[in-house]
Image (cartoon, rainbow over the protein chains, first blue to last red):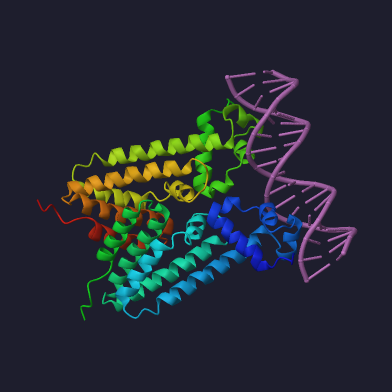
Length: 180
Length: 180
DNA sequence: ACCTGAACACCGTTCAAGT
DNA sequence: ACCTGAACACCGTTCAAGT
């Protein structure tokens, strides 16, 4: 079998974190899943922390890509609706956010903060485009983002609850059609 | 010095989790902070898991007490406002929720679910008392609770953001005075 | 260039032995 | 009844040695 690459280790790490949480991230386990010994790990990375750092970076880039794709939607109301739907539908992909947001791993906090700020900015800009004043847009964005994070953590189990949540969020958090 | 009690170990564990996260919970560290050796731990508990279980139970009881106190507020709108304020003000005490809600520790999920259900029920009942229909009360409670959880995770750092958040949540998530 | 295998410190758990 | 101290398996990290 061909040798393992840095990306192989990162992918295995992100998959393990999203699936079983950060605590499950063990070098011997990762090594076994890649059919090498744990000693091999230290040729690619200086430490477990470095693996985590690089995996976090990769995750951050993926989030940027998602937002950039959503930004292609011209109508701000439709864009907000698409963001809310994405938040509810891609719940598996958001396992990473849930697993890392409360972690005390060094360097996780800044990444979480950057992703939060990036998504908040996305919301504020969309609300302003939709006709809200800056302060009102900011307040509503905070509320909407908190609801978004909270919904991820709630892992709404019943499909009906999820549908209710999205419907209600769309209604009460997306402004009425342009008042301009 | 007198011998350690089960409660001493539980208190030390909850404090450690709230302060540095679940990963920091190590028996030797706890033992040192209590001035005993780690071997002593196993006279009180069968395993680390049992310590966690008992600590979770204790935490759950504390949450019930908080809700019961809030229930003494007769006016549902004032009660909802008090809950939202408590969520924002007691952020330190909620470090436990943040630290545990995304954990994959066995037995943590059921406790989180019971606490969530308990708080959701509290919200739904308050909204119904405030004049909303059952389905509308349920949808709004879901949104409000998601915002509540999300706000905890966001750890809104700036005081102004927190104030904005509470003001806006109160305005958009608490129904207008009784329509009956 | 990439991997193995042995070594060491640390944590979870057990248990015989102390008081 | 409560605690100590040694023991063992497992993980993070290092490093000399292999190919």
